[in-house]
Image (tube, rainbow over all chains, first blue to last red; front, side):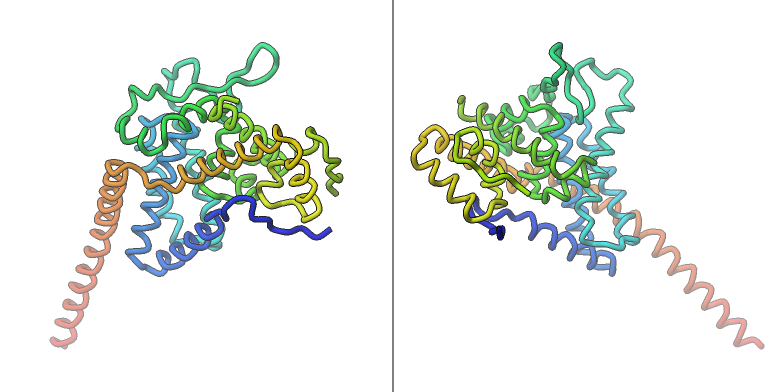
Length: 207
Length: 108
């Protein structure tokens, strides 16, 4: 049977974003300062969103942003595949978040790997709480930015699902790109996304 | 190869993400749509998932708060300014060397 692309949802901007990233990378590599600034801004924004939404650490966000800034700046000069830039960026940001977490010797007990979540007695995994919003900087701005309901719903997701929702739905990466960033199979990405969507729907609609 | 959707609620829900992502063929889509016309519960799930996905995608498009963007821009300017200084210094050194070589060439 022939597969068709059915427009059940509005088309995602993900593909266009990937093309735009590649264009910026090429121009920046040729010495275009405006393109470099735009690319560096986007890299930092992606780092902030990842840190805030997936890891739940706004206090780490500045460090993760700085890391993304420097690594992107160094990487652009020697990049061979501009189309692969987005995957590289999110993998870099994810690693920076993980390293940041490992470096914390005084980490509270509820902080665990973003891939695992908190093990429960029945062999499953429970969600890890995101940072207490009251302690986060720019709280009002962050709430306005994301919406309290969605933020609360994301908090319920296990971290291994949250990263998939973030990359696929919010950042617009393809299933293949998400698999490359997270290091799991495409089939696994689809399974987690399917389950995550169900949990989010229940949280958002009180089903 | 994917198994045909039998039209029941369970099979329908198992394929719902693939349906919403446009990964099913026309026949599979028709099966799901036919089922939803007669099953209000599944139709509500499809609508709810559509709204959920739409909400996530819109959140992803929203620009970050101004203070965050301001700090990001400041970091970029600092980095690019710091990177520009050694280049300028290199240029000045090269100009001095050229002048020295020129003077030596004039004397001989």
